[in-house]
Length: 135
Image (cartoon, rainbow, N blue to C red):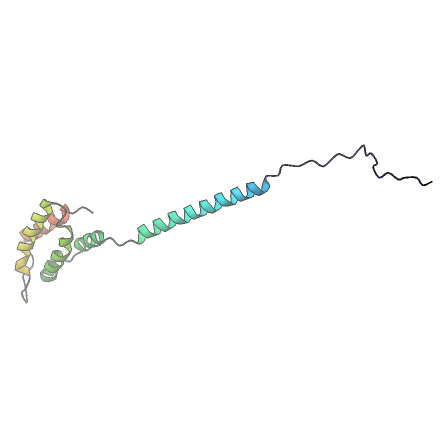
C-alpha cells in the first residue's frame, strides 16, 4: 500500500499576503504637474515683464526729445517742436488750443533760409507747452 502524501502543511508563523496601499506614484505625478504648472506660470510672468520693458512708447520718446531739444538753432527746433508736439495735441481741447497757438508762433522760424533766435515770448510758450504734457 502506498501512502498518500499531503502537500497542505499548516504554516503557523507566516502571514497571508496583504495588499498595501501605495500612493507614491500619484504623489509624484501631482508634484510633477504642480511644478510644471508653476514653471509655466513663472515663464509667462517673465515673458509679460520682458514685453512690457521692451515695448516702444512713442509718447515717452517724443516727451524725452522735446525736453532735450536744443533751442539755440531756432529753425530746426521749430520743425522738431511741430513734429513732436503733434503727438500730444489731441489729449484735451486745452492741449489742442495751446498747440495751435504755438504752431502759429513758430511759423516765423520756418520756411526761411536763416532765422533769428527765439524771442522770449516764444520761449515762454514752448516751456509752457512742455510743462502741460503728461506722460
